[in-house]
Length: 487
Image (tube, rainbow, N blue to C red; front, side):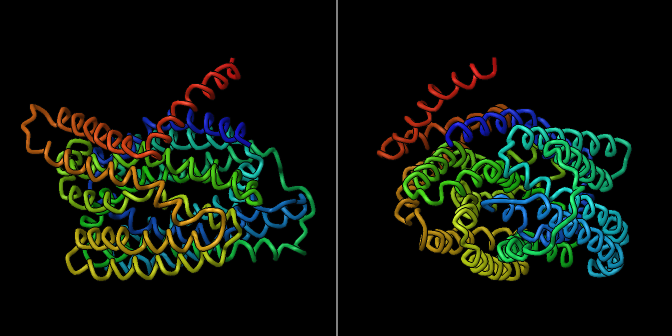
């Protein structure tokens, strides 16, 4: 099992290296070519696509990955149901596009974007089952390649369109290209064309398993994207554009890492579900490495936000800096919390997952409504505070009520890195008072000091030192083996 994990990590790691310049470009280059209003218009439609895509999937991807056995006729049945639902959802969204524009105060640009974006739901329906099969078969190389190529081509299409003055249509085009590449790549990677006569009898077990996951995921997306809907309706496209970039800069890196982890870790945890000790060891090992490398970086970017945001994406985005700073507070616990849906799913605890998602949705929506009085910044602050002080402790308690992972495991694992984050925050904040000849030197010094302070503090704890030793051991034992395999 460790061989699968390491090989998968290598493939995904290489893909991430390939994707890195394009991910950076999408966060840095495109905002310099587009205006806040362009991102605001696109952000008004993006939540609709996200929710519709989850409903289309209906949790079937996770059900396919988790299922002990599959027959091709059953997979064919699932495929045709998903494709039919994709066409139906696209027709519905196209017909409702004028109502979407009306909701956003009759914004003349929103309706056409919603109508064109309905095509994406058809592409999603054609992709979902094949993508699930790729992950079930642990074809991490294919998954990684598809992710990298789609990101690269989508970014190139957006830049080309932006340079021609396409505005918000550049963002729509880039997403469409990513979807097409993912569709072609998943079909080629699986090597299966649904020619078999589909069997629909007995498929209810997949939907029974997937329905709570779909509802839970939809609730999470609603809690994540309702802020954009409310701000777009109340503040307008320019204010939403600033909020969207601050939000994406803070949370997109986490979402990218979560996607990689889900592709790699969920199949492994699902197969270890009957071996509690190995399950616990594998999971805690992963989250400690995540905290070691991610938490200091979150602290550094949050503290330096007033300098970082204008430096990275331009002075026109300066109003997004305080929004970004508040949202990094919510990102502090994400190295652990973003993995917990994998615990629910791998342990087949879909009802628990649904209950948690309902709680998260209600409390997130409440924070958005409370913060909306103070505009986009108020929404960001209310969400960040409620996320760290309310949702995080409740999630950690709820996920450890059952299963191999205990709440004491989580807090004991997190303690060295939480202490390191606190120390890093203090020293990096003090550093901002010093004069620097350039913004680049200030940001570089802040990042170096954040990691030095966080790691130095974590090394004072036994578990912190053990995590660092584990990192060195992995580098010494697994990297040479992988290099030999590559020759």
